Length: 263
Image (cartoon, rainbow, N blue to C red; front, side, top):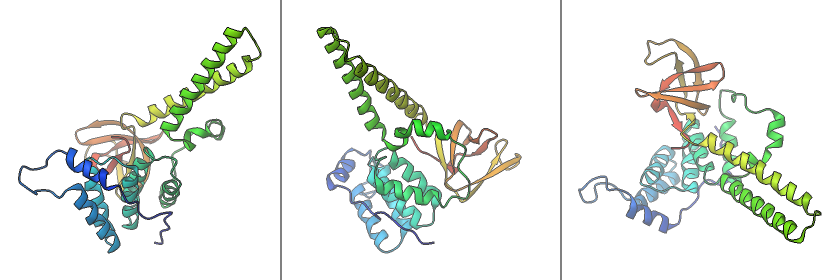
């Protein structure tokens, strides 16, 4: 499988790794019982350059588990898993990176490439009209949307204050426009928050899974899904999760078969 990367690796700032080493909880009381985040990061880079992509991905993940929350690190993990042939895990980490650096062109290029390798068609989403009307919802990251919402609200308040103080009506068009923009952006931010909170979205990790009517292999198999497919997480019980692929495709899978995009 030929893989094209916009940019294979990102180098993290040394101070970020040092901070993680200082803040991460001790995994053992024994001295040097576990490698530091910095050492694991260097191990990951070395494994990558040797072509040992699975080992690189696991080492990068250890850095993330040591408390480093960084979009570039997640991007590296996704690239390593994609090179290792693990499409599901690659998409999962790209999606987590997208929460932090959502408008990064390299990330979006690699994510789109990985999504093109999926076997399952994406579940039906919003209509074309809704996607056009809310195009900024997918083009802009949540922090940018929140900043634009605050700016539009501030502009509306300033124009309204000026109109009241100077008793002029010619600014009414600006007030209405900025007010509507603020309202629309606020609704968009609320939609993003609803989609991204409580671990509602997940990515199928194994190459193939059986979605069943209940827990265990004795339950009826309803349908199958493949690596990289995005699903909604509805419920968690006894080590299993109830997922929804589409309105008519709902069932249970083992919890370890899915990666929740937001933890």
